[in-house]
Image 1 (tube, rainbow, N blue to C red):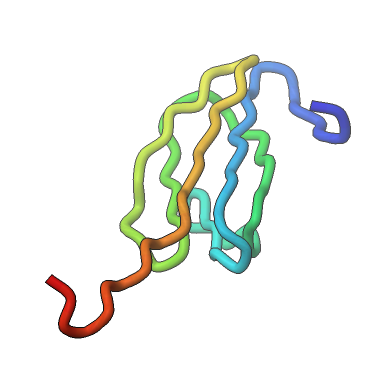
Image 2: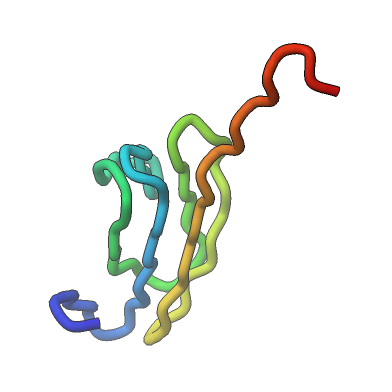
Length: 81
């Protein structure tokens, strides 16, 4: 994408999350959402969003990998079935 320099032989991890969600890739804090574009070497990388469990994402050279996290669902009011 324009404005994102991706070194030759690398891929792009594009992350879209709710505003204020912490973003970590391979244990490195990258900032808060709503989004980030991260050039990475090809292969498996560990993505952690907010307080969630780490998940593996596979980045391929010359390709964009999209990771999207939806907003947390609201808890049901007390007394709801």
